Image (tube, rainbow, N blue to C red; front, side, top):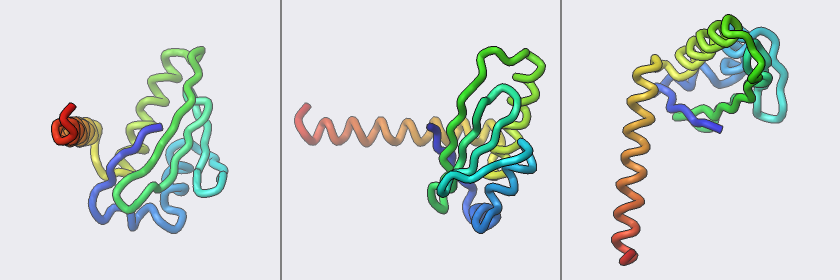
Length: 118
């Protein structure tokens, strides 16, 4: 399970069925399981996504290891397109934000450990 930051104010496009609509636009048919939206296309057997909060989405994929390289490439391109649509960030921006978030979490963890005398 991965979470991705959403560009400020971008969640308005995703609420009230917008997230599901973008999933269908990118991967075809989708179904709902509680507040999760589920699609299947190409290399992933299943793509599951939901709006976690106003600032992030939660996404999980189950990959098919037997997918052909052509199918895997097409799926990867659609996956990046979908993430751009729903987060408002391109792949480089998402990677930069993930690195900054991991760095901040590591720094907070180190500070907490130092406070506890570890």
